Length: 238
Image (tube, rainbow, N blue to C red):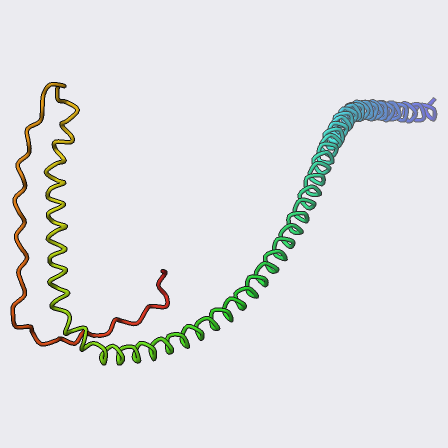
């Protein structure tokens, strides 16, 4: 009995310790299971969040791709329109440039023709000026010769000048008398249509006689030499 009692106590202590160890192991296992469950829940939650994030990212990517495709198509349309406009502008610019080149060629040809005509006219003008200078020199010589001839032949004309002046004064007096008579008869001719048939116009008073021209003095003045007429102007029109 005495030898078995210690063994039972030892076994009881060992059993108690084993039970404690089992309890601790169970507690640790329960804590590990709880931790595993918490980790599983966190992992599940993370997976759900990741799934939602992936879905949102995919939706944003699809939306971005759609917007990018729409912008690309729109930009392609604008680029095609811009290319067409640029092509038409280039064609118009080339056409205008060709027209300007043609106009410049025409202007150059016209300028060359005008220069040729100007050269021809210059030659003609120079020839005409030379002819006019020659003609003017000839006329000057002729005028000087005529002046000398007129100076030599002017003495008889100067001697007969007083008689001719008297005749001219008499003729001028007669012309003045005729004009006075016509001016006196003009009011009667204008008023004649307004008179009645039985009325007779009164006779107009005769005009006053014109003064007789002064007779030249008995003594004739000395003959005055008249200068020769100026030479004719070759540039004046007839």
